[in-house]
Image (cartoon, rainbow, N blue to C red; front, side):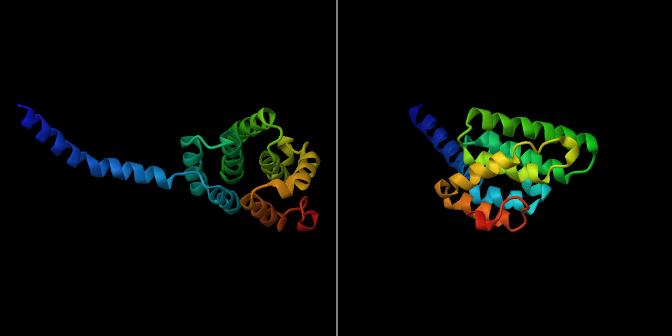
Length: 167
């Protein structure tokens, strides 16, 4: 009786092992990568944003709420349909603002908000913190990770607010 149970468990283990390994490999592929996040934000591809949202919401990354809010805000600028745009914009703004309120010293959130505010339509009235965020980003730039510094310098190429000379 004991040998039969052992054999059954062994066979089940062998049959289930490939599926478990694939799940683990899929999770490995979905790990949050800050460089990939900023590439998605810069590219403006809705499908890439949706995929990055899956990554951000599926893992306990630091600053998860800020990243998710920025992605929703970026997506709102790219989709069609005024109601969908507004709903996404509101949801993204709430998440990003909540992240800033909960961690006002997070410079990356201030940069994300600045990038969104600079391109937000006037009708949504989301421009009030541009100068304050710019000052924070300029002051703390040297303390940011190289990936975020690179993202900021790339953003400066097309920004009316931030310029490479600021750093």
